[in-house]
Image (cartoon, rainbow, N blue to C red; front, side, top):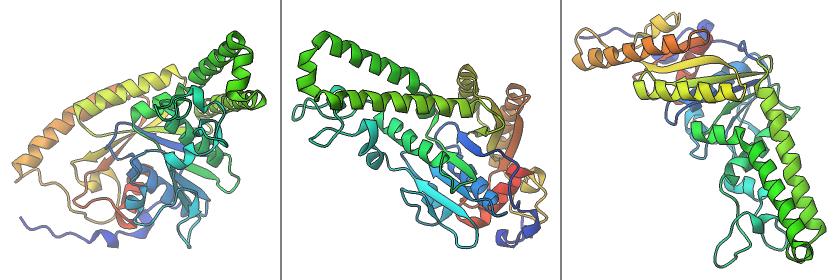
Length: 337
């Protein structure tokens, strides 16, 4: 069947949001591969369109922000558009590990690195498991406090990484406690091993970082400052994982304001008033489309029940890959409808 459709790039600019109704921090979380990067990029783009200085930052080790925005995104925040105040950064875990309390050993390295892991060649060097996530979080905290940005949009790592970051304060407190206990038991030997004053400086650095993470959790718990948005696709496994994520976030006292269901096989015009026709799945003559839609409807019904009380937004499955400003503007319209 032939369809008369309008090119996506010709969608009326009036339906694309200039600015967003959201607090200072917007974080997208969820399972890997559900479209968190797409949502973060679209939200940041819409946010910056009304002159709000906006940073979109990825903490996911497998970055795709550059591909989604169709431009090179550096590891440090930089303005990527001349016409609007849109900034972006892809945190490099290796670079992040080179500084701060999780840096490796060596003459000028972290004096605590020896207690955080190592190998046969350097048994007192290395970094602790999860240190790359902790180092990425250290940089994210700096960016969230940066006065250059009025809003920060975060493309988080997959679910497990995000939850480990929220567990960091307890882990760091435990680590500091073990170090202090070890120092007391080994007394003078520790001074020679770790360098005395340097050892104390390293422990203080861990304490300070733990306090900053706790402050971050406080910000996450404040809906006036943060909107944590869970992204999923309309499939049973994704719905289940999102339910578990909501439950764990609830245990940390982190409210979820918005749930985004991505790649829904329905007419984009039914999701948002786009003012133009866009290619949509053919449920009449395409048996595959109809069967997939039946599967999705079951997951959508379940998600509506589970996420009752949340602001549930739908983003359609597009015929094209979401890359560059054309489709990101449409995604933003669906998110802000």
